[in-house]
Length: 531
Ligand code: G4P
Image 1 (cartoon, rainbow, N blue to C red):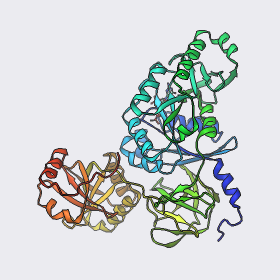
Image 2 (image 1 turned 135 degrees about the horizontal axis):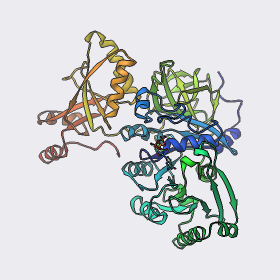
Image 3 (image 1 turned 90 degrees about the vertical axis):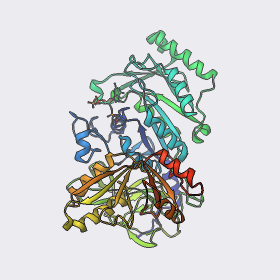
Image 4 (image 1 turned 30 degrees about the horizontal axis):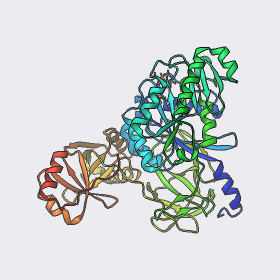
């Protein structure tokens, strides 16, 4: 098939420069789903807010796919929403809302160029917010911070800025400043040009909120002290030099801040403008040898998520690819770096929740869902002509462990197939040892809800109902084959191998780990990854 040769390098560079690929991340309940639907609404992808929201009473469920998600009203799966806004192409990657699926969030973050961190004005920085800040810092992802729910009484705006600075080390550089305290959200002061954007409520926030931008004098006449207070506070930020600096933002030293109410659609338009104006475009990505792959090089990309069983009508398996360079054209035959084998891309789709569309062409920054891509695993690279391998996506250290067995031993074949599939997708980590055998592997997870997903899918999708039994380990450390005999002699320590070849030593708790380390200081017992 074609190799994208009919699309010029110049076009690829221009298309890459138009891309803004980002994820919204937050502590659960900060308003991520609400903001996602508001962004989609603004892009006029959907007619009325609510279509992507899975909470009770809303119209339909687009991004929450499994029954379990619907029951609990949480979003487990990742999907990508693409829309055009101004002259940009926005790729919004969805991340799971629940902390138990943070490994999944981490994978999605490997595929974005920027993150929008949503903070609840009344709650400030929460546990998951802090973890995600850390992950972004580790991956050098620039962060735009959105203080959400300003329509509700909450913290003082300056106090929130202090909290961001003190707890993350990033200097907050507000682009907008709220007019009206939290609970009395009238509009925002645009700090770049000192104008005022006044927001007007619409019925239930279901349609785009009214906005009117005016000069400072008109704002003062209209809002009185609410306006002058905002100006004074903004002047204080000036004194501290808390103004946007593009280089410092891209280098991860500062975070631009905006104020919003996702539920009322206030500030959403400005967030989109900000993404277009300052978020980084798709640029050359570093390969595993730290060499940049220019965006106009031949096609390349990597798998950041594998997902199956999205609904009963589509019992297939999707591998999500982030395009890093060149043009993706449906039908092209690329090379799968892990095996060196050709890989046909006949069934390529753009996926958002249940909605799927066939995708014919994609550029750097875009996400392509490849259907029935059973050979692909998370972290795999694909390329055309010039070989490239992107860095592996690190796995988290599991903290919960279960032995899993088929309830019905005649279903062993289905059982094995299911376990292998869940392993490939990274739903859980699969650990084994000769002692335990393949009939009773150990599943490792970052959060216990991952086990529920695994159990659900083993029964529903692979027709292999299972029994699970908890193991009393909470800590995993990477070790080497040489250390295994010594570790095997230790009480309540077990060594298991993971499918990526890592050997993991499991310990009941920190004290047990420290005891073993004290006794055998030469043992290799390394922490797995940032968490
Ligand atoms: P999440 O995806 O981050 O978990 O949060 P989600 O959007 O589901 O929002 C959590 C709750 O916060 C929802 O209320 C939502 O309506 C509310 N919310 C989101 N943004 C704002 C905002 O800007 N202002 C106010 N006041 N509330 C906001 P809920 O009662 O849990 O659900 P629902 O019945 O309203 O859907």
